[in-house]
Amino acid sequence: MKYGLNIRQDGVMDFICLGALVHRLDPGVIPFRKASQCQIHVSGGEFNCAANLSDCFRMNTAVVSAMVDYPIGDLIAGQVRAMGVRPFYKHFSHNGVNGPNMATVYSDRGQGVRAPVVFYNRANEAAAQLKPGDFNWQAIFSGGVRWFHSGGVFAALSETTGELIIEAMQAAKATGAVVSFDLNYRAKLWDIWGGSERARSVLHRIVENVDVLVGNEEDLQLGLGIPEPQAGSRAELDPGAFFEMIAAVVAEFPRIKIVATTLREVHSTNRHSWGAVAWINGQMVVSPTCQLDVLDRVGGGDGFASGFFYGLLTGEPEQVAVNLGWAHGALLTTFPGDTSMATLEQVQAFAKGATARIQR
Image (cartoon, rainbow, N blue to C red; front, top):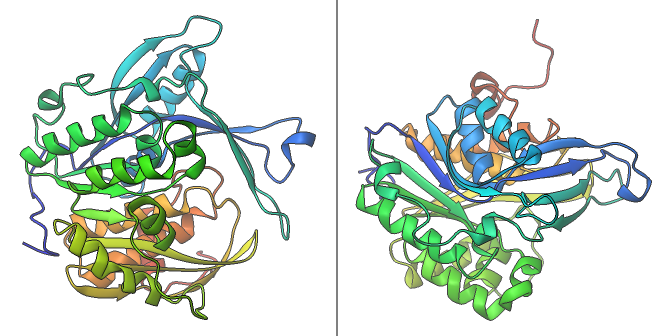
Protein backbone atom coordinates (compact mmCIF):
# COMPACT_ATOMS: atom_id res chain seq x y z
CA MET A 1 0.00 0.00 0.00
CA LYS A 2 1.36 3.43 -0.98
CA TYR A 3 -0.06 6.93 -0.39
CA GLY A 4 -2.60 5.24 1.89
CA LEU A 5 -4.14 3.68 -1.23
CA ASN A 6 -4.25 0.11 -2.45
CA ILE A 7 -3.69 0.74 -6.17
CA ARG A 8 -4.19 -2.37 -8.27
CA GLN A 9 -1.25 -3.38 -10.42
CA ASP A 10 -3.42 -5.43 -12.79
CA GLY A 11 -6.50 -4.64 -14.85
CA VAL A 12 -7.34 -4.20 -18.52
CA MET A 13 -8.13 -0.52 -17.95
CA ASP A 14 -5.87 1.85 -16.06
CA PHE A 15 -8.52 4.58 -15.86
CA ILE A 16 -12.25 4.84 -16.51
CA CYS A 17 -14.24 8.05 -16.14
CA LEU A 18 -17.91 8.99 -16.11
CA GLY A 19 -19.02 12.40 -17.36
CA ALA A 20 -20.53 14.53 -20.12
CA LEU A 21 -18.87 14.96 -23.48
CA VAL A 22 -19.20 18.46 -24.93
CA HIS A 23 -17.90 20.49 -27.85
CA ARG A 24 -16.36 23.90 -27.24
CA LEU A 25 -16.55 26.66 -29.82
CA ASP A 26 -13.42 28.81 -29.69
CA PRO A 27 -13.09 32.02 -31.74
CA GLY A 28 -9.62 32.62 -30.30
CA VAL A 29 -8.98 36.17 -29.13
CA ILE A 30 -12.03 37.54 -31.00
CA PRO A 31 -15.10 38.10 -28.79
CA PHE A 32 -18.16 36.12 -29.90
CA ARG A 33 -20.08 39.28 -30.72
CA LYS A 34 -17.51 39.98 -33.45
CA ALA A 35 -16.50 36.44 -34.38
CA SER A 36 -16.85 35.06 -37.90
CA GLN A 37 -15.23 31.65 -37.38
CA CYS A 38 -14.47 29.21 -34.56
CA GLN A 39 -12.35 26.17 -33.82
CA ILE A 40 -14.20 23.18 -32.36
CA HIS A 41 -12.63 21.40 -29.38
CA VAL A 42 -14.03 18.18 -27.90
CA SER A 43 -14.00 18.35 -24.12
CA GLY A 44 -15.48 17.37 -20.79
CA GLY A 45 -13.67 17.56 -17.46
CA GLU A 46 -13.67 13.81 -16.93
CA PHE A 47 -12.95 12.95 -20.58
CA ASN A 48 -10.04 15.40 -20.62
CA CYS A 49 -8.30 13.31 -17.97
CA ALA A 50 -8.93 10.07 -19.88
CA ALA A 51 -7.71 11.64 -23.14
CA ASN A 52 -4.57 13.06 -21.52
CA LEU A 53 -3.72 9.80 -19.79
CA SER A 54 -4.15 7.92 -23.07
CA ASP A 55 -2.53 10.28 -25.57
CA CYS A 56 0.31 11.73 -23.49
CA PHE A 57 0.87 9.15 -20.75
CA ARG A 58 0.20 6.00 -22.83
CA MET A 59 -2.31 4.46 -20.46
CA ASN A 60 -5.41 2.39 -21.24
CA THR A 61 -8.44 4.58 -20.59
CA ALA A 62 -12.18 4.68 -21.20
CA VAL A 63 -15.08 7.13 -20.93
CA VAL A 64 -18.67 6.34 -19.94
CA SER A 65 -21.07 8.93 -21.31
CA ALA A 66 -24.10 9.83 -23.41
CA MET A 67 -23.83 9.97 -27.19
CA VAL A 68 -26.39 11.46 -29.57
CA ASP A 69 -26.58 9.90 -33.02
CA TYR A 70 -26.32 13.02 -35.20
CA PRO A 71 -23.43 14.87 -36.89
CA ILE A 72 -22.22 16.68 -33.75
CA GLY A 73 -22.18 13.36 -31.94
CA ASP A 74 -20.20 11.84 -34.82
CA LEU A 75 -17.65 14.66 -34.55
CA ILE A 76 -17.24 14.14 -30.80
CA ALA A 77 -17.07 10.34 -31.07
CA GLY A 78 -14.37 10.68 -33.72
CA GLN A 79 -12.19 12.77 -31.42
CA VAL A 80 -12.70 10.30 -28.56
CA ARG A 81 -11.37 7.57 -30.86
CA ALA A 82 -8.51 9.80 -32.04
CA MET A 83 -7.32 10.26 -28.46
CA GLY A 84 -7.27 6.50 -27.93
CA VAL A 85 -10.07 6.48 -25.36
CA ARG A 86 -12.43 3.49 -25.33
CA PRO A 87 -16.10 4.57 -25.30
CA PHE A 88 -19.02 3.13 -23.36
CA TYR A 89 -22.07 5.07 -24.55
CA LYS A 90 -25.76 5.22 -23.91
CA HIS A 91 -27.05 6.27 -27.31
CA PHE A 92 -29.79 8.84 -27.88
CA SER A 93 -31.59 9.66 -31.14
CA HIS A 94 -31.87 13.32 -32.17
CA ASN A 95 -35.35 14.38 -33.31
CA GLY A 96 -33.98 16.81 -35.88
CA VAL A 97 -35.32 19.87 -34.06
CA ASN A 98 -34.52 20.25 -30.38
CA GLY A 99 -32.54 17.24 -29.30
CA PRO A 100 -31.47 15.56 -27.18
CA ASN A 101 -28.20 17.40 -27.71
CA MET A 102 -24.49 17.23 -27.04
CA ALA A 103 -23.82 20.36 -24.99
CA THR A 104 -22.08 23.39 -26.47
CA VAL A 105 -19.55 25.50 -24.56
CA TYR A 106 -18.73 28.95 -25.93
CA SER A 107 -15.35 30.30 -24.83
CA ASP A 108 -13.25 33.11 -26.21
CA ARG A 109 -9.68 33.25 -24.95
CA GLY A 110 -9.49 36.93 -24.01
CA GLN A 111 -6.22 38.80 -24.32
CA GLY A 112 -4.09 40.84 -21.96
CA VAL A 113 -6.34 42.81 -19.60
CA ARG A 114 -9.48 41.36 -21.27
CA ALA A 115 -10.58 38.22 -19.45
CA PRO A 116 -11.81 35.06 -21.18
CA VAL A 117 -15.59 34.68 -21.42
CA VAL A 118 -17.35 31.31 -21.03
CA PHE A 119 -21.04 30.49 -21.40
CA TYR A 120 -23.06 27.40 -22.28
CA ASN A 121 -25.95 25.91 -24.15
CA ARG A 122 -26.85 22.77 -22.22
CA ALA A 123 -30.53 22.78 -23.19
CA ASN A 124 -31.97 19.26 -23.50
CA GLU A 125 -28.51 17.79 -22.93
CA ALA A 126 -28.37 14.03 -23.37
CA ALA A 127 -25.84 13.58 -20.56
CA ALA A 128 -28.21 15.26 -18.10
CA GLN A 129 -30.73 12.48 -18.80
CA LEU A 130 -28.37 9.72 -17.67
CA LYS A 131 -29.55 7.90 -14.55
CA PRO A 132 -28.82 4.86 -12.38
CA GLY A 133 -29.39 1.63 -14.27
CA ASP A 134 -28.30 3.02 -17.65
CA PHE A 135 -24.95 1.18 -17.66
CA ASN A 136 -23.88 -2.38 -16.95
CA TRP A 137 -21.02 -1.64 -14.56
CA GLN A 138 -20.23 -5.31 -14.09
CA ALA A 139 -19.54 -5.60 -17.82
CA ILE A 140 -17.64 -2.29 -18.02
CA PHE A 141 -15.37 -3.23 -15.11
CA SER A 142 -15.16 -6.92 -16.02
CA GLY A 143 -11.54 -6.90 -17.19
CA GLY A 144 -10.41 -5.01 -14.09
CA VAL A 145 -10.01 -1.25 -13.62
CA ARG A 146 -7.34 0.44 -11.52
CA TRP A 147 -8.82 3.94 -11.19
CA PHE A 148 -12.33 5.42 -11.54
CA HIS A 149 -12.99 9.16 -11.87
CA SER A 150 -15.88 11.59 -12.12
CA GLY A 151 -16.53 15.25 -11.38
CA GLY A 152 -18.74 17.99 -10.07
CA VAL A 153 -19.82 19.43 -13.42
CA PHE A 154 -21.48 16.14 -14.34
CA ALA A 155 -22.99 15.89 -10.85
CA ALA A 156 -24.56 19.33 -11.34
CA LEU A 157 -26.36 18.56 -14.61
CA SER A 158 -29.54 17.04 -13.14
CA GLU A 159 -31.13 15.27 -10.19
CA THR A 160 -30.10 11.89 -11.64
CA THR A 161 -26.45 12.38 -12.59
CA GLY A 162 -25.21 12.56 -9.01
CA GLU A 163 -27.05 9.33 -8.23
CA LEU A 164 -25.40 7.71 -11.25
CA ILE A 165 -21.97 8.80 -10.01
CA ILE A 166 -22.64 7.17 -6.63
CA GLU A 167 -23.81 3.95 -8.32
CA ALA A 168 -20.68 3.88 -10.48
CA MET A 169 -18.32 4.64 -7.57
CA GLN A 170 -19.77 1.85 -5.47
CA ALA A 171 -19.43 -0.60 -8.37
CA ALA A 172 -15.84 0.55 -8.97
CA LYS A 173 -14.96 0.17 -5.28
CA ALA A 174 -16.31 -3.38 -5.34
CA THR A 175 -13.74 -4.26 -8.01
CA GLY A 176 -10.87 -2.72 -6.04
CA ALA A 177 -10.47 0.50 -8.04
CA VAL A 178 -9.25 3.76 -6.53
CA VAL A 179 -12.03 6.36 -6.75
CA SER A 180 -11.34 10.04 -7.47
CA PHE A 181 -13.55 13.09 -7.86
CA ASP A 182 -12.91 16.64 -9.04
CA LEU A 183 -15.27 18.98 -7.17
CA ASN A 184 -15.30 21.59 -9.98
CA TYR A 185 -18.06 23.60 -8.28
CA ARG A 186 -20.11 25.54 -10.85
CA ALA A 187 -22.75 27.72 -9.21
CA LYS A 188 -24.49 28.47 -12.53
CA LEU A 189 -25.22 24.80 -13.10
CA TRP A 190 -26.40 24.04 -9.57
CA ASP A 191 -28.62 27.14 -9.48
CA ILE A 192 -30.71 25.79 -12.38
CA TRP A 193 -32.26 23.02 -10.31
CA GLY A 194 -31.07 22.87 -6.73
CA GLY A 195 -28.93 25.75 -5.55
CA SER A 196 -26.05 25.64 -3.09
CA GLU A 197 -27.87 23.70 -0.37
CA ARG A 198 -28.78 20.87 -2.75
CA ALA A 199 -25.28 20.93 -4.20
CA ARG A 200 -23.72 20.34 -0.79
CA SER A 201 -26.13 17.50 -0.07
CA VAL A 202 -25.38 15.71 -3.34
CA LEU A 203 -21.63 16.33 -3.27
CA HIS A 204 -21.39 15.22 0.36
CA ARG A 205 -22.92 11.85 -0.54
CA ILE A 206 -20.60 11.47 -3.51
CA VAL A 207 -17.43 12.39 -1.62
CA GLU A 208 -18.21 9.79 1.07
CA ASN A 209 -17.11 7.26 -1.58
CA VAL A 210 -13.93 9.05 -2.65
CA ASP A 211 -10.26 8.19 -2.05
CA VAL A 212 -8.67 11.06 -4.00
CA LEU A 213 -10.27 14.52 -4.08
CA VAL A 214 -9.33 17.37 -6.42
CA GLY A 215 -10.53 20.85 -5.51
CA ASN A 216 -9.35 24.27 -4.39
CA GLU A 217 -10.36 26.24 -1.30
CA GLU A 218 -13.43 27.69 -3.02
CA ASP A 219 -14.57 24.23 -4.17
CA LEU A 220 -14.17 22.87 -0.64
CA GLN A 221 -16.06 25.77 0.87
CA LEU A 222 -18.94 26.07 -1.62
CA GLY A 223 -19.24 22.41 -2.58
CA LEU A 224 -18.74 20.72 0.78
CA GLY A 225 -19.32 23.51 3.30
CA ILE A 226 -15.78 23.29 4.70
CA PRO A 227 -15.17 26.52 6.67
CA GLU A 228 -12.84 28.99 5.03
CA PRO A 229 -9.70 29.86 7.01
CA GLN A 230 -9.64 33.21 8.72
CA ALA A 231 -9.01 36.00 6.26
CA GLY A 232 -5.50 37.29 6.03
CA SER A 233 -3.07 38.70 3.56
CA ARG A 234 -1.93 35.67 1.57
CA ALA A 235 -0.28 35.44 -1.80
CA GLU A 236 -2.25 33.50 -4.42
CA LEU A 237 0.42 30.79 -4.52
CA ASP A 238 0.55 30.40 -0.74
CA PRO A 239 -0.72 26.85 0.04
CA GLY A 240 -1.44 27.74 3.66
CA ALA A 241 -5.19 28.23 3.28
CA PHE A 242 -5.53 24.93 1.43
CA PHE A 243 -3.64 22.98 4.09
CA GLU A 244 -5.64 24.66 6.86
CA MET A 245 -8.84 23.23 5.36
CA ILE A 246 -7.55 19.66 5.00
CA ALA A 247 -8.03 18.74 8.65
CA ALA A 248 -11.72 19.54 8.36
CA VAL A 249 -11.99 17.62 5.08
CA VAL A 250 -10.46 14.39 6.39
CA ALA A 251 -12.37 14.64 9.67
CA GLU A 252 -15.65 14.73 7.76
CA PHE A 253 -14.58 12.29 5.04
CA PRO A 254 -12.15 9.80 6.64
CA ARG A 255 -11.97 7.65 3.49
CA ILE A 256 -10.06 10.42 1.69
CA LYS A 257 -6.32 9.82 1.54
CA ILE A 258 -5.33 12.53 -0.98
CA VAL A 259 -6.52 16.08 -1.67
CA ALA A 260 -4.87 18.11 -4.43
CA THR A 261 -5.30 21.33 -6.38
CA THR A 262 -3.55 23.85 -8.58
CA LEU A 263 -2.43 27.30 -7.44
CA ARG A 264 -2.76 30.12 -9.93
CA GLU A 265 -2.12 33.86 -9.76
CA VAL A 266 -3.49 35.68 -12.79
CA HIS A 267 -1.45 38.73 -13.74
CA SER A 268 -3.19 39.05 -17.11
CA THR A 269 -5.11 36.70 -19.38
CA ASN A 270 -1.84 35.53 -20.91
CA ARG A 271 0.50 35.72 -17.92
CA HIS A 272 -0.03 33.47 -14.91
CA SER A 273 2.04 32.26 -11.99
CA TRP A 274 1.45 28.52 -11.64
CA GLY A 275 1.88 25.98 -8.89
CA ALA A 276 0.25 22.90 -7.37
CA VAL A 277 -0.18 21.39 -3.94
CA ALA A 278 -1.30 18.08 -2.47
CA TRP A 279 -1.99 16.53 0.90
CA ILE A 280 -1.03 12.86 0.53
CA ASN A 281 -1.93 10.66 3.48
CA GLY A 282 -0.69 13.29 5.94
CA GLN A 283 2.25 14.54 3.88
CA MET A 284 2.14 18.10 2.51
CA VAL A 285 3.67 18.39 -0.95
CA VAL A 286 4.17 21.64 -2.88
CA SER A 287 5.31 21.91 -6.50
CA PRO A 288 7.79 24.38 -7.90
CA THR A 289 6.28 27.56 -9.33
CA CYS A 290 6.70 29.00 -12.79
CA GLN A 291 5.50 31.85 -14.98
CA LEU A 292 3.15 30.78 -17.77
CA ASP A 293 2.65 32.49 -21.11
CA VAL A 294 -0.88 31.21 -21.64
CA LEU A 295 -2.30 30.46 -25.06
CA ASP A 296 -5.51 28.77 -23.86
CA ARG A 297 -6.17 28.28 -20.15
CA VAL A 298 -9.13 25.89 -20.51
CA GLY A 299 -8.20 22.38 -19.38
CA GLY A 300 -5.16 23.31 -17.29
CA GLY A 301 -6.68 21.94 -14.10
CA ASP A 302 -7.59 18.66 -15.81
CA GLY A 303 -4.05 18.61 -17.15
CA PHE A 304 -2.72 18.79 -13.61
CA ALA A 305 -5.09 16.06 -12.40
CA SER A 306 -4.19 13.65 -15.18
CA GLY A 307 -0.45 14.12 -14.73
CA PHE A 308 -0.82 13.71 -10.97
CA PHE A 309 -2.94 10.57 -11.40
CA TYR A 310 -0.27 9.17 -13.74
CA GLY A 311 2.38 9.71 -11.10
CA LEU A 312 0.28 7.88 -8.51
CA LEU A 313 -0.65 5.03 -10.87
CA THR A 314 3.01 4.45 -11.70
CA GLY A 315 4.11 4.56 -8.06
CA GLU A 316 6.28 7.66 -8.24
CA PRO A 317 7.42 9.41 -5.04
CA GLU A 318 4.90 11.95 -3.79
CA GLN A 319 6.93 14.98 -4.87
CA VAL A 320 7.46 13.54 -8.35
CA ALA A 321 3.74 12.81 -8.76
CA VAL A 322 2.81 16.40 -7.87
CA ASN A 323 5.53 17.77 -10.15
CA LEU A 324 4.30 15.65 -13.07
CA GLY A 325 0.80 17.06 -12.64
CA TRP A 326 2.15 20.60 -12.32
CA ALA A 327 4.32 20.21 -15.41
CA HIS A 328 1.60 18.68 -17.57
CA GLY A 329 -0.95 21.33 -16.55
CA ALA A 330 1.56 24.05 -17.40
CA LEU A 331 2.33 22.57 -20.81
CA LEU A 332 -1.35 22.12 -21.62
CA THR A 333 -1.92 25.90 -21.43
CA THR A 334 0.49 26.32 -24.36
CA PHE A 335 -1.77 24.37 -26.75
CA PRO A 336 -5.17 25.26 -28.22
CA GLY A 337 -8.01 23.11 -26.97
CA ASP A 338 -8.82 21.23 -23.78
CA THR A 339 -6.69 18.10 -24.11
CA SER A 340 -2.98 17.43 -24.25
CA MET A 341 -0.66 17.72 -27.23
CA ALA A 342 2.40 17.18 -25.02
CA THR A 343 4.55 14.06 -24.99
CA LEU A 344 5.46 12.12 -21.89
CA GLU A 345 9.09 13.02 -22.44
CA GLN A 346 8.26 16.75 -22.51
CA VAL A 347 6.30 16.45 -19.27
CA GLN A 348 9.04 14.51 -17.51
CA ALA A 349 11.69 16.96 -18.68
CA PHE A 350 9.75 20.03 -17.53
CA ALA A 351 8.95 18.38 -14.20
CA LYS A 352 12.69 17.99 -13.68
CA GLY A 353 13.39 21.64 -14.52
CA ALA A 354 13.89 21.73 -18.29
CA THR A 355 13.70 25.13 -20.00
CA ALA A 356 12.17 26.33 -23.26
CA ARG A 357 15.51 26.36 -25.10
CA ILE A 358 15.10 25.09 -28.64
CA GLN A 359 15.58 21.34 -29.07
CA ARG A 360 17.81 20.60 -32.08
